[in-house]
Length: 307
Image 1 (cartoon, rainbow, N blue to C red):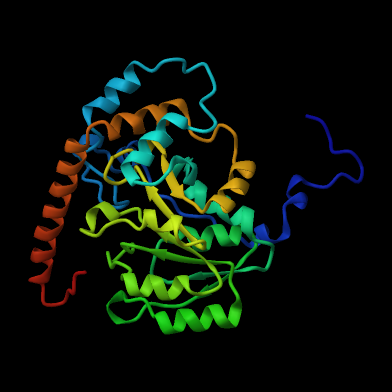
Image 2 (image 1 turned 120 degrees about the vertical axis):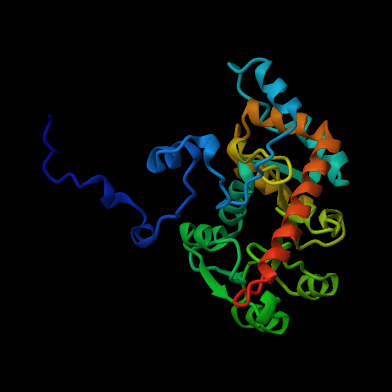
């Protein structure tokens, strides 16, 4: 083995200083790792720790992946086929839509395009922890506005936080993870009147009985809506998310995103999933039914208050 040249520093000396204190994100372990740890077959494990869709995607997805054309060719950098299908599904023009390697990629991309070190982001815990994690990666400061009893948004406190801290981004999750609460229309209207970019994460919107606010983006210049194929479509392992963005913001996201961020397999699978809405809606209804059944059972416990 060679020796270091005199004066050469260790590789970690070149890491950005704020990352030296970054706590790593703790992801959920996959089936094969759990199987090895527990000494059980993957099919014998009931996995409920990551809100994954255990029914899986429609058969069309596996068929499409089995007959994948041109895996040796780089994917369409604009995901045109998928964005056209999403325009019909979400009811917004395709030019507002950007597809990512999961909505997580779009959260990070949005931060990279808007945040300077020290800029503020508002978060409403308890909620999805990727907002705070990505803010830390991007050297931003997180202003936390805790939820009220019953996990309700504290709208007056949010308005005060925006006034006091001038954040660039305000993250809202509707339905919220972990409690399932939905942002009311009047609450969203109040927050959109503030001088900040409101990011509405609708990963679970199909399970809420409420309509998406995706179409609002065309009328509200400071609203972003994020959605995913991980939940209702059962494609968490293929990492497909999408966002609906104001056109003036989308221009810069297109410039900054990785050119081939959505794989051929991911785009083909997502298009195939959208081709069988009857299956997706049936799975959604089954999951909602099971959720209600479980909530009823948990409500019978004297020490539990399920949401």
